[in-house]
Image 1 (cartoon, rainbow, N blue to C red):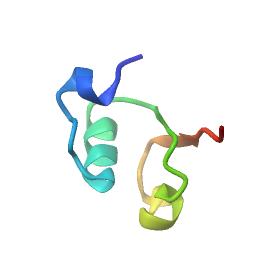
Image 2 (image 1 turned 60 degrees about the vertical axis):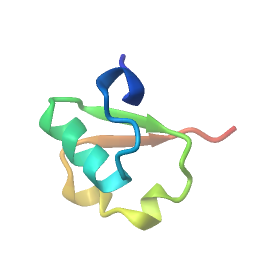
Image 3 (image 1 turned 180 degrees about the vertical axis):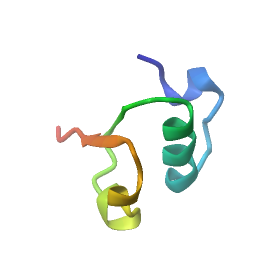
Image 4 (image 1 turned 30 degrees about the vertical axis):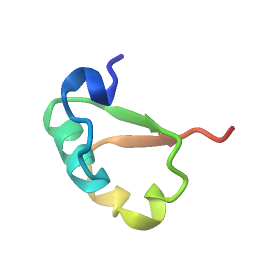
Length: 54
């Protein structure tokens, strides 16, 4: 498991972040951003998005 800062992707907007992750071969992204499902078309990417609720 890697973090966004570890990958050098800090500051990247959600759409670009999801595209980069999918392009890099990641199969899932874990986030605490509850708004991501309303901001992005998650059904168009070959990557699962897991939203953690705390």
